[in-house]
Amino acid sequence: MTETSANGSTTRRRLLAAVGSAGVIGMAGCTQSGGGDGDGDGGDGLSGTIDIAGSSTVFPVATAMAERFESEHSGVDINIQSTGSGGGFANHFCPGRTDFNNASRPIQSEEEETCSGNGVTPVELTVATDALTVVVNNEADWVDCMTTDELARLWSAEDPPTMWSEVNADWPDQELELYGPTDASGTYDYFIESILGEEGPGHRQDYSATEQDRTIIQGVEGSEGAIGYLGFAYYSQNTDRVKAVGIDDGDGCVEPSLGTARTGEYTPLSRPLFTYPKQGSLSEDHVAEFARFWLENSTSEEIIADEVGYVPLSDDAQSEAMERLETAIENAQG
Image (cartoon, rainbow, N blue to C red; front, side):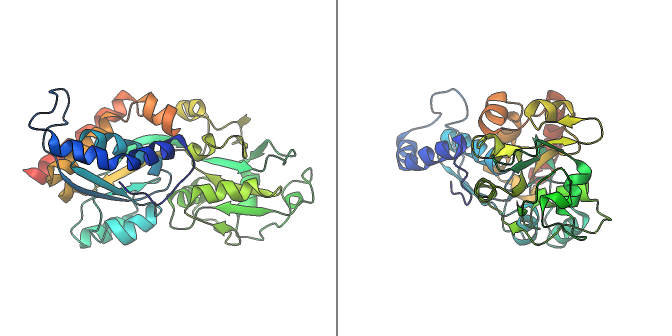
């Protein structure tokens, strides 16, 4: 398995360990004969490559699932790229170059049209819930909570402020330094939808834009006046380096957490996360089985919550997604 985004997390450490032992796993697979140990699917002969692109927010979930699947099926090679949701759809998935696209927001109608024009049918599968998190420097002792109006003012393209005091008179005359995802990111799209409004003036462009969430953490950590936003998993792995800001959506300040995302208290920045397998790719057994494996583990507290840092699916949400997947597999293989 390959990766293009590193975040210093437990998932990354597990990934490096898996990469380091890949040759041993491959050799063991060559010497095994028929049926494995009779427990699980390790000896079913699955083999082939799976190519995945898309959201940096979903990347840690995809990586965790891929590690586990490859450890059980040594003949399957899963390649994951962190390209942003929109970048994945536009440059990889809809042109037919990848089997899955990860996304931190639903596929857009124009993307569906592009996919359709290329004979690609996306299958929408919800895989987790995220609490999009606003972070500031640890020395920014003037702010522990902000309203959604203040957050919108900070990031609006209309007369963008350059000092913290321009947004709230109680904040200091400290120069603002902003870090966030690029416009190819689903996180960027979701922030516009939930905070700035799709009919509003738009997202300011005078900020440091990146598809690498670790760069956002590094930027905010390195400047007292910095602010950024990213998926909760990346914050949860770096709580000593930056400070999360609570959000007041009109009913008081709520801290981002798995608990507040799970209950729906953390509004409006709780959001579903998706992966989109290509229906045509589901005709291949190894792709179909990986998609099933992902959903089967999407309710796992150990993987989704403890290791990655998102909210697992409920049993009902998992059943709904699995039903949609099985229909797509039947259509692809029937």
